[in-house]
Image (tube, rainbow, N blue to C red; front, top):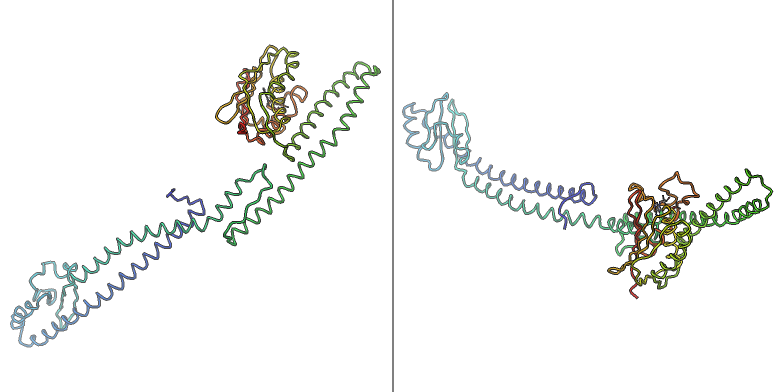
Length: 443
Ligand code: ADP
């Protein structure tokens, strides 16, 4: 369980705001309770202090007439005997009477235990301090109780805020999770309707699905266009090739024109290959081929034999290692195509005297197919991109020496459809090693 808050997330912000709101409510209610209690305690203390002041005022009025000495004597005798209450009488800042228990600093020093009030009466300053210890202790006790229950309340508020935020954002998170599972390979999937429908989330879900409808339409249209365009290009290219070949074989061309037509023929062949690759790619993407059990080892043997004459003509050693039966669930011609493209590249980018080797290895429910060469290699910065369409690591090679840049895109797509992975490791100048991993069939 993650306890920290990410304020960049909606969930974190909702949780924080809910927590702050709950904490503010708690603080407000505790402050109100404290104030109310203090108001009632204070009015009780004020009442008692007012009574005592009145008593003192009456006392002064009764005894003042007897003269100063009489007043002082009476004060010492009677004021000191009022139990619990402290009194002080001043005349022009001169102390006439001060109860025992009052320090030289005066009554105000005792504010922590006594409620002190004063009033001026006929030139005298009368001060009384009524005991307030029990009221002040009651207030302290209440505050302590509030502090403990406040801390507990904050904890409950945090948990509440967390679960509230999780609840509020769950529909959005569910949409996000479902949306993440949709990519260009399963564009026909849609976000499912949840069991409990919330208006806002439902709006997001339906508009996302509508956007997917439009996107899928556009992607399908684009695929169809590529397929149609490639198909339409096939015939004119075949006608062009035929015309160029017959012009060459007629012998009517002077050497310069013949060289030009030969170069055109090469271009036409490269274009034909590109068109075929485009057709293959759009076919693979639009109609999933029926699957059957295919032994990859058979395919390796078959394709290596097919490429052996090319390897021999180029003076490249082509050999096979570690062959073991490797049944996979797939489409034979597509798997053949994977090997053909990898072998074609390996032979294309390896010089005379080099070596190309194919190895097959089974392990833990998967089969690993390696096609290694001792050729030109690929710079590290290019290894990710060579699986993209039309990407050629060395653009200086023309289409005749390299290809259109579709071979590895086809490999990647086929491997992907077979729930596998393809990767490459390469040491520029020393060679490359392509690895295809496919799940072994359980059948
Ligand atoms: P191409 O038709 O150009 O060969 P690919 O998609 O088959 O297109 O390969 C893309 C690029 O990856 C190539 O242009 C080439 O630069 C590089 N590449 C592929 N295989 C190899 C290899 N075995 N050795 C060196 N470079 C390679």
